[in-house]
Structures are given as structure tokens and as C-alpha cells.
Length: 135
Image (cartoon, rainbow, N blue to C red; front, side, top):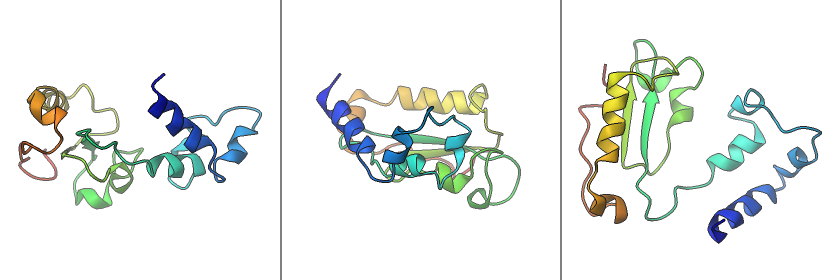
């Protein structure tokens, strides 16, 4: 394992707010970890995107109305946002949106970004989206 990855795991599990979960009889389930106030989720959400990594975000928002007050039926839009991403793409769909053609097109766009942009962070500007939410 790369030493940086091992150190990140060690740092995470040495936090005082995460230590109680290490003494549990069993690991928390995904259902236990769905609360944005859960200590483990709060701890990992504080880990920033590594320098030099170009992160992109796809957020599903089900229904009409402002995306900021909505969600995908499982995750609220405000909980799904990640600081420091190169681009954020919202699609008007429920939680499992990975088979949707708009989502697939966005994944394809990100995967085909020029290698120079991916390797050098913000050297080349990312393609602007038509807006925060695409129908």
C-alpha cells in the first residue's frame, strides 16, 4: 500500500471522535453511516481532495425546484456537494442515476479530459456546464 494511503487511514482512525467505533462488536452498516451527523461520516468528509487531483462531481436531484433544497431521495444536495471540484454536474433523477444517458455522457466527458489537464490540476480550464442542473 502507498504510504500516503496508509497514513490517511491511520490519521482517520486515531481521531477521538472515531475511536469509539473501533471498539464496537461489529462495523457500522451503510445505513448507520447515512446520517451526515455520524462521527465517521463527519471525519471522512473533512478529508480534502489531494493536491494535484482534479475531482469532478455528479449529483442527482429528484423532482423540480431549486437543487439546493432538494436531493435524490437518499442524499440531500447540500450533503453531496464537495468543495474544490473542477466541475459539478447535476442530473434531475433519483439516487441511482448511473444508467442515465446524461450521467454516462458526463462520466465520458470527465474520462476524456486531456491528460495534461488531469495531470496538472487547473492548468487547462474545464468545460463550463450549461447550468447547475441539466434536465
